[in-house]
Each structure stands twice: as C-alpha cells, then as structure tokens.
Amino acid sequence: MAGLAVNVDHVATLRQARGVDYPDPVAAAVLVELAGADGVVVHLREDRRHIQDRDVRIIRQIVQSKLILEMAATPEMIGIALEVQPHQATLVPEKREEVTTEGGLDVVMHKDSVADAVKTLQAGGIKVSLFVDPDLNQIKAAHKAGADVVELHTGDFCESRSPKAMAAIQEAARLARKVGMEVHAGHGIDFRSIQDFIGVKEIQEFSIGHSIVSRAVFIGLDAAVKEMLALARQV
Image (tube, rainbow, N blue to C red; front, side, top):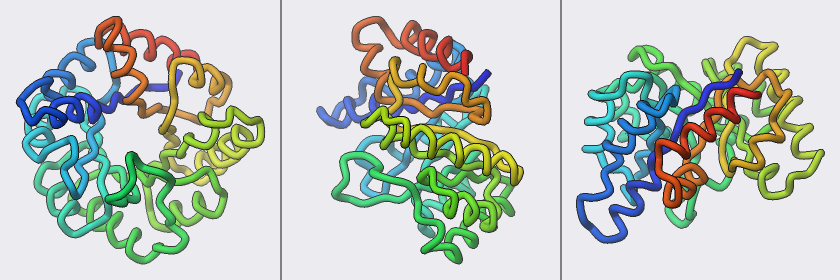
C-alpha cells in the first residue's frame, strides 16, 4: 500500500489572492493529518507566492506525521531547511514565470551542485528527495548524488494517460528501488489518474495537492483526503 502526503500550497494560494489571513494552510495541515494523511507537503518558493516562512515554521512545530519541504537548491532555501529541520527536503526546479513546477530537476546537468546540496542537507539530519522526470539517466544521477528518495514527475502521464508515459514511470521506479532509493510520485495526479497506478508496487508514497484541495471545495478537506487516501492504499 502506498502512502499519501498532502500538499497544502493551494490553500495558501487562496489566502494570498486576497492578502488576508485565511484560509490558513496551518489549519489545513492539521485537518489532513486528522484525516489520516502520512505527511504534509509545502513548497516554499523564492517569490513566496503561496506558502510563507511563517507557515513552514508553525507546521513543523505541530505536524505529528512528517513535514516535507519542497524547495529549490539555493543557499537561502538550504539555510531555511537546516534551521526548520523538516523531516524531508524535496529538491525541485523553480522558475519565476511558471504557474507550477513544470518538470523534474535535471540532476544530470547539475550533478555537482545537486550532490553538494544533498550532502549538506543530510549532514544536517534531513532526508533528501529529488523530484525528477521518469528517465533512467536521471535516476542513475540521483543515486550517484546520494539522494534517499526520488519523486517521479507524473505530469506527462496525467496529461496524456498514454501507455508509453506509464511504462517510463514503471521502468524508472524499478531502477530506483533496485539501487536502494525510496520511490515517491507526484504532479497532476487526480482521483481518476491515481487508479492507473494500481499495481505499480514500487511507488511507496504519492504527493498530491491540487486535486485534493479542489475536491475539498465541494465535499470538505477531511472527506477529500480520505477519498484519495483510500485510492492510494490500493497501489
């Protein structure tokens, strides 16, 4: 059975749209944990477009499962991670002009800087995941960089639902497990597409946010998390 870590960024996006103090992603973090989620995910971006520093620090104090901090591998973010001490840091690419993360981290091209970031975070007692495309060369580079986890970027599959894209995910997941890394998956997964992952036993955890928060608008956050959790447990 796969686990489920819930990203609460989109709760913060709604708050920031009006520049008010609600809805609070801290409250959302409590609710997703009470609903049974295995972890809470926040992405602290350079431009602070949704999650704020305050959110990260408070959620770290109250979370009872685990806090996963998505972040760019920059000196500023590495410093914040070492201070806050999330249970896991997930290194992702980041561009100011993108709406959301558009693809995986190119570990092959940036192998030295990524390896340095991994080493620094691990030395600070933080488990490190690399968000990568389901490409065998990226998996090999992530392993060489010393990552504990790879999170496979599932956006291409979720947009196309093509057998070829799913085959790439399966092949990457098998290699990652073979070399001893944990395998997580995320980006674009909704209540329909997650069912396509049933049988991909290598995936140990899903990271999902937008579809859960969107569903919560109609049925509430507790029910939305429980629905997705039940589907993840089938994988």
